[in-house]
Image (cartoon, rainbow, N blue to C red):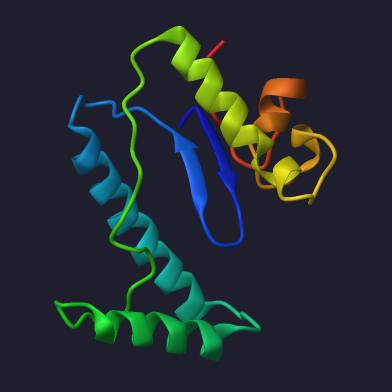
Length: 132
C-alpha cells in the first residue's frame, strides 16, 4: 500500500498488486481479507460496540443476494487505474485532504488514520511504501 485515509464511513487507498493481478481482483482480495480479519477481531476482542457492529453486519449480510452471515464492505467501489505521475499526485493529494475537507483536522498529517504523516515526517500508524 502506498497511501490511505480511513474515514468513518469509507476508505481511500492507493495500492498496487505485487503479482500484477487486475484491479477488480485486488479489491476483491483486499475486501475478503479485511472482512475476515475485522470479524475475527470483533468476535474475540473486547469491543464496546461489538453487539451493535455484529447486528449491523448481519443486517446487511441478510439483505445481500447471497444471504451472507455478515457483510462489512459495500458491493460498489470507485477504482481508478493510475497511469501518469500527474494523476498519481492528484489522487494522493485528494486522499490526504479528505479529513481536512471534512473539518476534522487543519492539516492532513494531523489525522491519525492517514498516511499523510508518513509522507510528511516518515512516521504513521501503518507502514506504507512511499511513492517518492
